[in-house]
Length: 541
Image 1 (tube, rainbow, N blue to C red):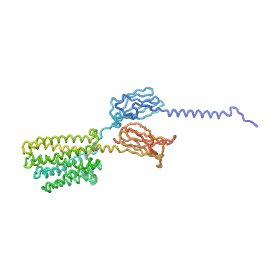
Image 2: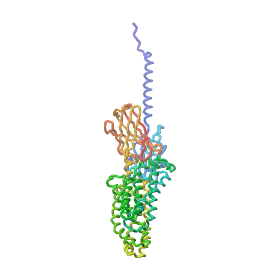
Image 3: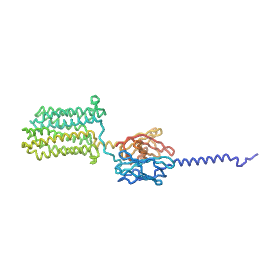
Image 4: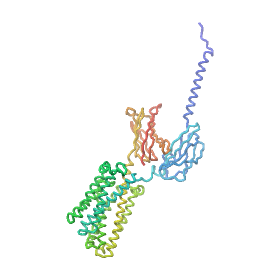
């Protein structure tokens, strides 16, 4: 029986194959290690998510290996970007010179470099100077120019009717008694107010439908206007104006009763709609709006009849002035208290007076009110008493001063009408607190991402993760990635922390700019499976 020969020739081929396999595996492992050995960002100055008291003197980025910059830019709080051209590589560290002065707010340092292996990488570093997410003052509500002008004019006309018209009817009925000066003028103003109240419904409908002015005649426009809360205001305003007109005709006891009902209608009309009446708590705000409206109508409504009576030196002018002077202090006190309560409810923070459009309008109105109040105080201290004694020069001077008061009052109405386009800080805070949500779906998994609040600045991300059949999915790791291609902001990555069986959280995530952001979730389902879910979310200013 022949034994097998154990010479080397029988094993040459297998040995060579084994050697080739070992070398191939080694080469593959070396190439794989090289392929995954891209440069990575190790440290930054300022640190990611840092909050600084002042602008940094330099930017510094340290990588795991030497890199060459491809693109460096800084995105500011207003969304504008500046290219950073002055930098100096130092071994594995890149020193970058920042712009000369940086505004307060959140900035994004966007970088893109190429590592030694020739692979480009990029990312973003967020830092804030002062509070995170500082943004420019809130803007007024955008509206079609022609429609906006029409709404403002109709609003001013409505105010003229409610305050000078209905208030004038009340003054003639209660303060003037038999005094008839200004009756024709009050009738004309009431007609203007009626016209403004009716047209305001149509303009309100145009705004509700975002329609141009040419669609004012459409029935759908008027239906839309009447369906809003302003529809109730217009109905009450028309009824109150009609009662004020009949009060001037009826005279006597019926006239006084109708004018009182019309004055009450002025307060009700204003309390049924508008920013202030919608504020919480409404058991406070609606009565304050009512008192504020009634007070304005009493004060400003008496100006035209009283001024004309003094200018004409009618027999009843002195008595009318005395009745007005005895009543106005209490009315002014109620007017000021109601105004202060409403201002506190609407503005909340003093900073909102200079940071919001609503605050700017309020300051303008207050400035005019102070002027009006100063004129009233001067008239009471210097001119009222001699005018009551029928001193002719004093009566003429008081009549001229009252005419100036009337002009200032009309200017106040014009400024107050601008509030129609400026949401109050209270409403802005409520809107800003609303979260931004997005549902992400892929064949392997799905998730709900909720960013609270849904505006630029510091947010908290809440993430719910499910499998494709809506069952709870428990990945090993979850990473939230946000980027904004339109603003040139590279991926901002934050690891999420488990907050429950299917819930994950990322706290202190700073979203530097409003706009449409690309959202990605990296779910490490197992050591060998990474699932990516992608979508978009809108971040408000």
